[in-house]
Image (cartoon, rainbow, N blue to C red; front, side, top):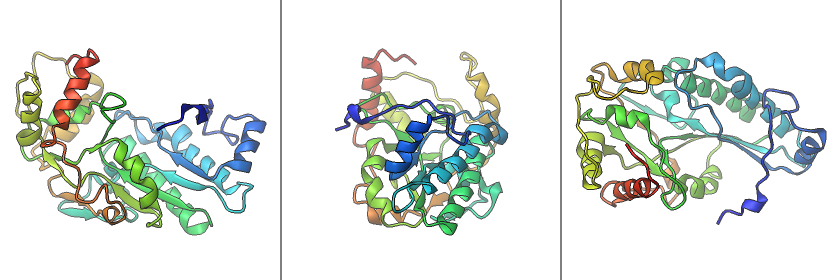
Length: 291
């Protein structure tokens, strides 16, 4: 159970040397903090790499320096939550190792993925050249727990739901957090956190959505719905990703040694047959969500 009273929210500017914090707060952190987990990233697929430099890329460098300046006997540990999109443009077929990505060109063609790959390299250098613990979980699609909040709506699922052969490895939200400690104790730097059980969008997800009571039309992959106005800000992203005849991620897989350290992730989590999709839709409806 989360104890809200232990959470302290601090306004900050991560690109600054002092992180935008007062000297007293910064001093207290250096005397007491043991771990830093970075999970905040601008989820805006229209931004270029340079848009992530000031607050995100430079911010990571500043945070690592503060971990190293800890006044405790050893530096604070640093965990950077990356994304499987850092390898989404790998030439297929491919299996991505739980290791550094060898080429910057392997990142998906958007600033979000490319900036995260740049930061992976920064964190990896810190892990190799300093005494600090620095690790990088690459996280796949993650839905919030239906017991605590609404599930996240992934625009790419909506856009590509008519594409037969496309698969997803979404995982229910609480499991990555529950298994984090078990996993990081076993790996030096990189590990993948995603559902080993994939599901097909057209053959599995769409029937489950219909069973939940939703009514919709399924269009071919390259046909836009003429009655709806798509998210215009994501038009270039969606066109680059889906307006082609490429096979998607069918031939892209990720090494999952993580499962050996995490019984809850071993073998994957069933989302379709378990009825979780219907539960998600029910929660959305009870919270007055409308399509």
